[in-house]
Length: 282
Image (cartoon, rainbow, N blue to C red; front, top):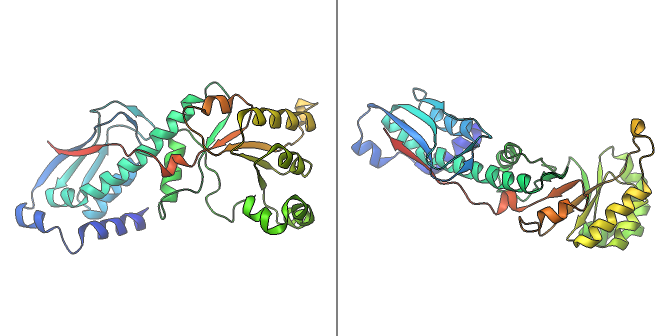
């Protein structure tokens, strides 16, 4: 986090803030961070760190907590100390806070939309380069869950992999070698025939990518019949089913109703609205 913030401050300030240096004396002031939109708060520690990196004499006191839902006009934090430091760190602190509140708020909308279904809302790797760790933190604050963060965490076999190795037949030929890697295995499918072909392999997860609602329901039924749990005390492992592709607030509830276990949504981190937050001198 410090490395990211240092780069952001360097990018924003350049050699020095010529306006502040020319106009503002080194006196102490007080300022507040105010939410101009209703939102789920996320990133206060990051904003505070930006001010402290700018000037160690600055104090940052949050008035709310990450994960808290606030209304428009709510004071999020109080900043005190040298005026020059506050003004120099202002834009960087607000940019990160606005971004992370935006991700957390959008995630919360999706999480609330699938109640009362027991389905997990998950992110993807469609993140802003260099900011993945922060955006995935914001997803968790919003009530969501993280899919893999790096390619080394999970074997996820997608359509391009299958095209190169020759489809399901190539997958079967390589299956024993894949299992030896000691990683969880997820396979992407687009149609029911592909789903049935990989169901016998019993991967850890099967991704139902851009599948229609009716076929999702059929996939859940097929999975449940094939790997029915006969003894709840000793549940038989079965592939988790993950819905993905073209997920929106308009169709999320129908998708959740199919019985899938997780729903991954790329727009949580690539198509969100930043929250308007301002710094006001008091």
